[in-house]
Image (tube, rainbow, N blue to C red; front, side, top):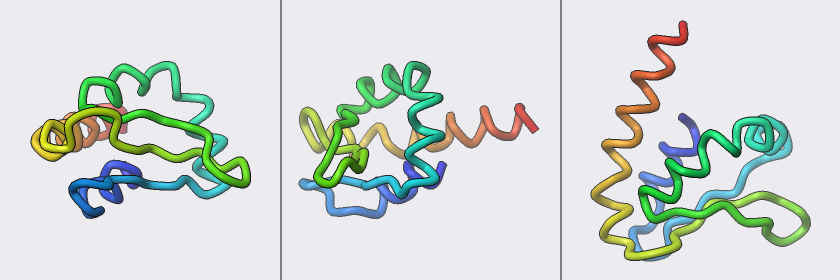
Length: 83
């Protein structure tokens, strides 16, 4: 959820978020599940400088801007059902 919020608040054309070490380990565990979600909202995960994982725009930034609020709502719904 924090990743989605960071992406939503970042610059529209160069949308990007870098994961800290704690989030990096969690992200590696759930990456197979979240990879399709990222792809659907025109984002991709990649290994950045110094070995940090980052999520950046992979397609049209307009698609990401329109889809991020919907994806964030979906993540919130999943998390609320999980609890």
